[in-house]
Length: 201
Length: 291
Image 1: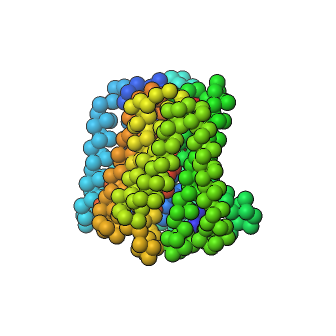
Image 2 (image 1 turned 90 degrees about the vertical axis):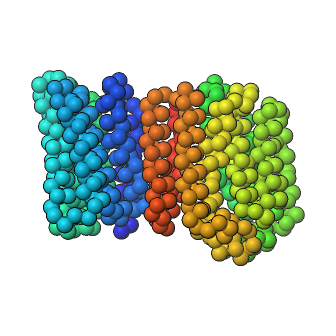
Image 3 (image 1 turned 90 degrees about the horizontal axis):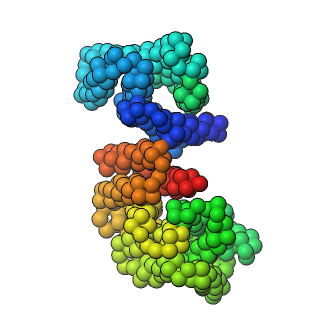
């Protein structure tokens, strides 16, 4: 499926936004959030660039499930480290174990539902944190109000993840062509919301 | 305008196509980035303009000389047989004269600006025209190393002009370009293997096979990224830009690993394109960091 000019533009803009976030948008944070956000936005940047270069069919690769786990997990680690100090270490351990569990269950052919359960737990926990935590801290006044945009971005990226997961499991919510044509738009809006949330929040 | 897509109508357009504008432009961009890595461009506009003109002329001159020398093999290869030299739309004498004149002006101008800068520019021209094209291209597949050294000279030349000396950062920047060039040339030699074989030009795929060629591309890409990151640290690049360079390098590394262990036409093409974007982005980061 050929990428339209508008989708190509959106992917380039996503790349630029993610590049900005890595280079400028996370300055001043402590070491671990910088590492976590660099990984999250770095993966977004490279993903957008590879889709631009290789076409949307790159999403058919089995590695997409593993790569798409990195984004929510590392974003959630950064957010927890900054705003939920009491569970920093346990959550970091959860993220590392969760990631390796996804890699392992996707690398070894398993006939049971374990791979799906592992994905559901890691994505679910990380997704809820990305969605709720920014909204809660912005409502509490711990950050500026616009930090809630990160949470909205979290909802969108979870939707993207769900669409891809259902598609890859053979029970697509939308037709492949619809998912593929929507993906650049969703990725761009998600990245833009994250960047805006961090910049103005 | 791409020489392989259509034939230029005017004489000027024909000679312009012989300079390979995109390739020369990219090499010029590396030269400017090399200069800016040492000097702030805002306060050196006159030097920047002279650097651009002299370097572009020297690069364009060497490219035209290559076209002149390789006109017989270009005519045998599908990829290059639409070039104006292959089609006989310009005479050999004309091409040689234009190539020599532009080269002399470019290198002469560079020498007049600064003797060391001029020397590096001349070295680039010499390695490209004499060592790579005339001497080694038809003899050994390792000629690409010399072609790579030639391609690495513009960034070194730019830095030398800004600094007045050759330093380790300049060498590292040049190494980054040198190691990046095989990604381009070897991908081409795989894609157009039959063309090169018909023309009797030895290539890595024809000499060592596809697996070794792919591994060489992957290894050189990774080493190019390492050299650029080391150069970035040496320049004193902002920590944020270094992070971004690290992310882009990780992408290159990932594609290099994929190319080694799961080689496909698609991954090969992806690495080829990504490496170009990577190098352009590296140059932009060097420039933005200084500005």
